[in-house]
Image 1 (cartoon, rainbow, N blue to C red):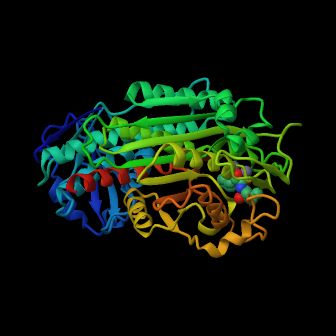
Image 2: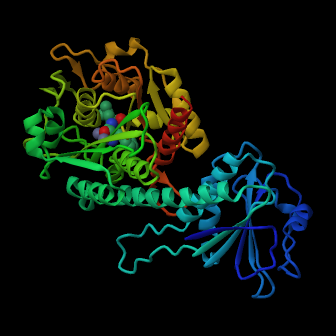
Image 3: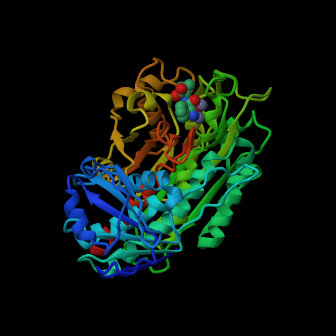
Length: 501
Ligand code: BES
Ligand code: ZN
Ligand code: ZN
């Protein structure tokens, strides 16, 4: 995909699709005057109905083939909400009208600063590329996504550089987000820990970052007891990927961020087995891992000035004669013992080892885990937002702000020590399920916190409701790559803070 910026002159009609983002409540005559396509005539449409509400789209078909099609994309009122999703939905709906050349007309936007226009271009491109994404990976007649070859932007009053930088970033991000969506959509037999490791190897080779894959024998040697306990019921050996991206020219004050992702490639529940009806959704139980994998891929691709370590413990949670029995006490990487009340609360077990490994081996400024951890967070927040649980107010605020900008909303839940008593065990250091069927998302966060040795900037993000669900490009449920866009946005902010220090 090539990007360019042109002036205001729309005489060159070789482009056959014009995309016109329209701020909420702009009147139609104004739109017409501003885009001024000389001599073009369109099939009559009802002007008055288009109010440019967020996500509202109007497609105008020209009378002559030599004129461009026009897609008016409503943005709603400022501050614009979830621009990526707005463009994604419009693109998907009018996919067949997408041409090899498109022009995005920025003239109708109100005055924006250069950073906002850059983010606008980025979000538009992310939405367009993801809206054209083809999810049907396993069909015999699988179609490859077809992207426009050339996207030009009318420049409006903005600097060419801001628009082009944003557009390039948008494309790189969308490519990775698309791959993360494919990985989450992959069925369990196509993404065992072997394929999870292969994905990371490909990423590490192409983006040039360091990757270590801990095989089962290494896990045994190093004492990843909780991950190995979950893996006991599985035919396929667990692995843990440890990836490290260090920028070449980082400067002295370089921040280090460690990301840990839950990589359960399928969650049957183990002996505390799940019911049948929606068990197949549990192929998405590696949504946290996928988000972390996509984030380090992009941090390296965009050469961010932040050090990022990604820790991805991965196994399935299956049923077998050797599987953990409810009530067993197991050991963990940290040496702390865990009473496993329910084998379906397996994510927190593998994360306990991932977090303890992080604390011991990778001192860091920020420690963040992402996990499809609890049904309780889905009950609390639905599919509209993920839960963020941290003692650190600033971290909660800055992550939530990035979520707001990227349309991946976070809502904070408390992690007061009052909840600790729920997970005290009579016979082990901690138990993996609260005594009462209450506050399950919070008690699981308190469980994880127990393995972080009081790290001052630790956050847990529960994405059980947001990693997999309704999505514009599929009829049924799809992976969403929730977290990738958010974390990359947050890392970009972090590197800017770094420069001003
Ligand atoms: N993977 C599930 C959580 C989940 C639920 C993810 C719904 C996506 C959608 C997790 O391992 C799990 O089974 N959690 C149980 C824990 C319970 C048994 C303590 C839950 O939340 O129901
Ligand atoms: Zn489970
Ligand atoms: Zn799970």
